[in-house]
Image (cartoon, rainbow, N blue to C red; front, top):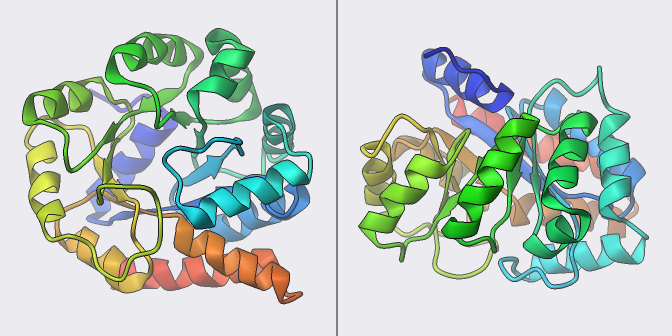
Length: 270
């Protein structure tokens, strides 16, 4: 079957080239939306294949301290879901790689599932990740998202039972997001070796690509994930940390983001 969505198409291209997808995460509005806009373009120019764009939320259950702090800064700057979508819409014609929105259930329900998905598609988003949405609710949202042209990406944790893992893999669209650690997001010096087995277990369950996130702190971990057979590497806290350091040091945040992304790209292509 020919891939039909931007995310599926991108993974299909990369798989045909034998390459691992690089998917950086950044928090929209940290420190402001103008910087987010510039950073999205810098990440694309530095070789990102897809981008995960966080919508700041006041109670981010899955996020570690680095991303929680970024969300707090973004909220303090007046960032709202509507403003994030407006910024993204303004990048049409410039940003050509798929953008996956990362949000929590409450903002989505507050806006209404149908309206949120429709507005996200209109703004140019290609996918959606909702980490606190249980599988049973995700199946309902997936149909709404698909009708709007969005892939709803579901998460698998190291503690997920095999039977439930199979159901999640079957329901996930675009790719399956494999959380590499038990706990919240954050920079870690090593990734647990059992992730290798989980990657293979998920890939044996169907054709949906598998991307690994939560804990990839730099090029070495990205290479490790690639060598374990993952189709994609998601890098969040490490990038957010680099961007925050540049901002607090009075540097060019977008340039710092692009430079770090370039290091990851070179490593994955080595």
